Amino acid sequence: MENRKPEFAFKEHSVISLVTEMRAYFQDLKSYYSISKGEIISRLDETSDDTRAAELKAKLIDINEKIAFFSMLGDSLSIADTVLHTDTMLIELGFKKKS
Image (cartoon, rainbow, N blue to C red; front, side, top):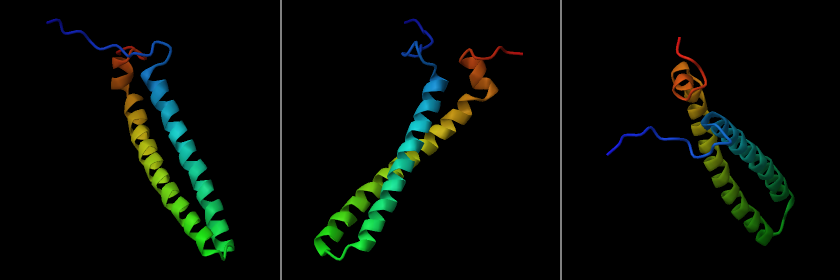
């Protein structure tokens, strides 16, 4: 069996650019849901209807879960992005010549 070095499947994007883009995307989603959370909290403070308050609290639970997931994804990709920009990885991926 031949041992061949794997090739990245997306020829039009580099691993580094894809990880960087994904990190920014998940950070943007986290920000989006954080703003939505603030809006829902404001509506919750203004409502006196128990049914509406229960609906808003359910939405808050859902949004808090999304914020947690997008935060973890963003943090994980931030670590990957940092590692990919080390000299060792830049050389391995062909973005920098070995000195």
